[in-house]
Length: 300
Ligand code: NAD
Image (tube, rainbow, N blue to C red):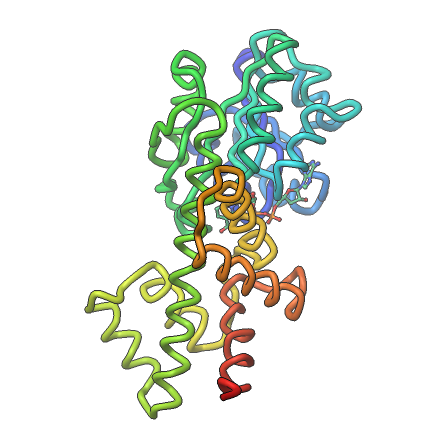
């Protein structure tokens, strides 16, 4: 396979690892990179997957498209524009495909700066979690110019289903708002469970009832039995990242001067929970924070 047809993938974490495996399975040769050597080695034993020998500039120089799957938009900006970053080695016409859940105004700014060097940016953040990444059924909220998006379609198809959202940055806005919805249903589900249990209702039975009722959501279907009732709290998505996403949704509402009380409240609760539970906590551990608040009573 010619070098110029290689796809770069930077960020082999909880999501990046299964996503990059699906590219390899679809016969798309990948040059992979992660700051963490162990994370990188976990995927490069597979065929079609090669570890970049000398970092980000190397990935940029050898690939026409480079996917970033990093924690934040600030991390993406550093990886792309920093010293010896991806852009420093990339040939004109190259595409950065940012699949991280980044902040949309930062994405628009990054696209403008890349444009000046003849490079393009497409944002395609994902939803579906680790199971969706493993099954290649992720929802891909894709922002960018039609002609540029068309050039990364094959790569996106190997990881999930494309939903065009509009110009660059629009995918990141759609994603942040999705995660507000997800956090809101996790919060509501947790509180409903805490009240139910205090009343003497059985939690597992309530989960089954809600899953067959109008209170059903991703939180009731995929989190109650699997991570909350059994107190595993290990869905593979950190509270820190969810807090970041809902913070992005909140900033978006603020910048557009949209009053959104519930969004503000959910964002506030996530921030408090993060402070209490720490950076390593899984997002489903939000339940533990709400459980503590519930135990304090209403103070009336
Ligand atoms: P993660 O922390 O598990 O993985 C991030 C990886 O990036 C790590 O392996 C880290 O070593 C690497 N990294 C960080 N900075 C780097 C740099 N400068 N160069 C190279 N590698 C670097 O995170 P994740 O859970 O895989 O999430 C990645 C993105 O996807 C985030 O934006 C997150 O919000 C989003 N997301 C996560 C989930 C989920 O369920 N985990 C679902 C949808 C979207």
